Length: 144
Image 1 (cartoon, rainbow, N blue to C red):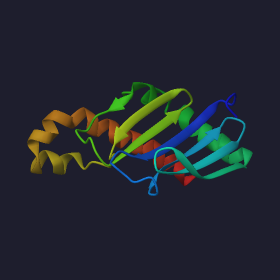
Image 2 (image 1 turned 30 degrees about the vertical axis):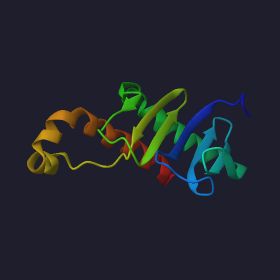
Image 3 (image 1 turned 180 degrees about the vertical axis):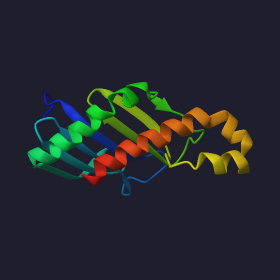
Image 4 (image 1 turned 60 degrees about the horizontal axis):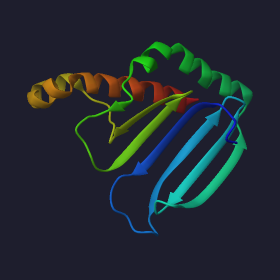
């Protein structure tokens, strides 16, 4: 499978100390040919579950179209979207060859944050915009 081209991939990986028998994250990869791979990890080294399956061609095309329609936005996103969080889960998104990493990503109500936490707003305004854009694209893909 190493020679297949990734269309979309999402990984959520624990960024905190965990024991060797605790769940540490998962990843879902969709390749351009419609093959999908789901991996579930325990500890940081061991594969708990591996599923490989085919996704319907029309669904794969829909996801490809979402990525294509958001190509400019995706290319403008930083490779590391740093919202000041350094613990919890790492969220790693991949659209074709573009990989984007962030921690504890969330939808931001920018106006409320501006009002309630102006310091954070000033420091992380651009980051909040990028997080919102990334989550919007991710939600579109998940809806397929």
